[in-house]
Amino acid sequence: MTYPTLPPNSRAMDRRSFLLGLPITLGAITANVEGQAVHRPLRIGILSAGGENADLQGPQPASPSAAALLDGLRNLGYRYGADFVLEGRGGQGSPERYSVLARELVSAKVDIIVAAGPTIDAVKRASSQIPIVMVGGATDPVDSKFVRSLSAPGGNITGLTLQQSDLVGKRLEILKELVPAAKPIAVLWEESSGGSWRASRTAAKDRGWTLLPYKIADRSAIGSAFASAKTAGAGSVLVISGGILFENVPLVVEAATTNRLPTMYALRIYPERGGLVSYAADLNELWRRAAAFIDRIAKGANPATMPIEQPIKFELVINLAAAKAIGLAIPQSILLRANDVIQ
Image 1 (cartoon, rainbow, N blue to C red):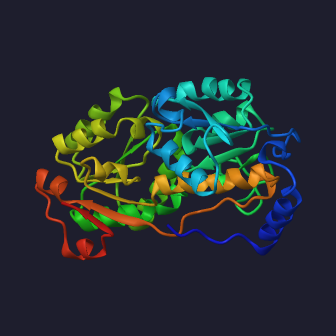
Image 2 (cartoon, rainbow, N blue to C red; image 1 turned 45 degrees about the horizontal axis):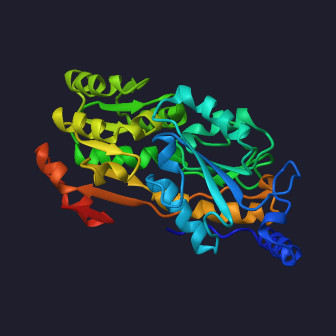
């Protein structure tokens, strides 16, 4: 995955911070926005929208996201136990848990918090001092007032955003190529992905397409949403992933297949687990890249002046077995554009 390069002044700042830090160890470097020393080993908190706490801890975490983060840190020379440890919290796909878990990480006195996109609001409310590295999410961080701007966040939050709302129009266009009939498109969204839902309404209005919205409040609403969409005459479905939908990928894919509805997803994990198609950046690569933000903060960089990165490469992934299961023929024009075709 390719990311935009940092502005020259940011690189200069990092070189100065690194040179100043050469005579001392990682554990003695002043790192966070509170001006406190980060002690060795660095205590890295992780707040994930899904999973269990145990999935996000230890040198070999079960969570693919946490594993990607560790891979990035090890590539930078960090050793688990000696240079850093993880303090993980998993939201189990329940947004009401995020605030409690964020406060737990603050109470655990972590030095940095790496937070999945859907949890950012909870982490921001829990601390304005601990540096926060945001990873992904369906919300525009500027529109949601998490940061002042992508180039100069201005607070304790930096990191990487998927900018999902910017991709909604493209996903809808691909869906219309798959199912060109003049039928409504059902949209599954949740509270944490409201920005993407609003973007989908704008994109559909501009193109004269009809949307059927289904707001998902918990996992029990997933199956009924697909069934209702089928009954209402939807020709296809757009899933705007948030914490609940991400935690219940198998249930979402099963409901789409059962109701024989061609479904576009916001993350690659869905077609990898039997869903039809996704158009997205690689989420695990974003978690791997988050290690560079941790490294810079540990060396003295201020999150307020660290530009937020956006992916500039996106992958179209198609699962042919999923298409066969619902009796859908994938147009050759789409197959030729696909970055990956799962047989």
